[in-house]
Structure formats: C-alpha cells, structure tokens
Amino acid sequence: MRRKKVMLTRIPNDSARRTCFKKRRLGLMKKMSELTILYGGNTYHVIYCPDESELILWSSHNKVQQKLDEYRKTHKLDQLKKMVN
Image: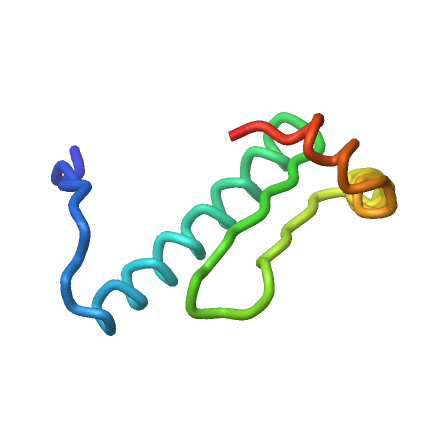
C-alpha cells in the first residue's frame, strides 16, 4: 500500500512543527539503524534542531565517533575547508 504524498511546506503552528520534526527524526534514526544492520556499513548523522541547544548525534560505530573527535580537534580554518553544504 502506497503512502500519501507529503507536501514539503513550512508548518505554521510551532507545536505542530516540533511534533512533526520529532516524528521524522525518530523515523530517520530508525531507518539509519536498519540500513546499518542490513548492509553492515558505518553510518553517522547529525541533526540540528533550532529549539534544542545541542546537536543530535547518532553513530553506528565507534570509529565514526573517533573521526568526529579528530575533526573537532582540528583548527577552525581547516574545518571550514572540509565543510560541505
């Protein structure tokens, strides 16, 4: 059975937007976990929420966390060179 097409527009109600964000975030984290188990790869994602003060980080493997720690220890100018939008 097909799902209904999701319209990607800004949700004007703040509480509804936060609720939708949390549901999508949980769905994304579940999907990343499933892909990690299915394909045996390392996955990592960073989620930014304007309402929360910290980034939400999820890693499937310690090696990915080590890479992130190395990146954080590098000089800010080098970090800017490695960033991608």
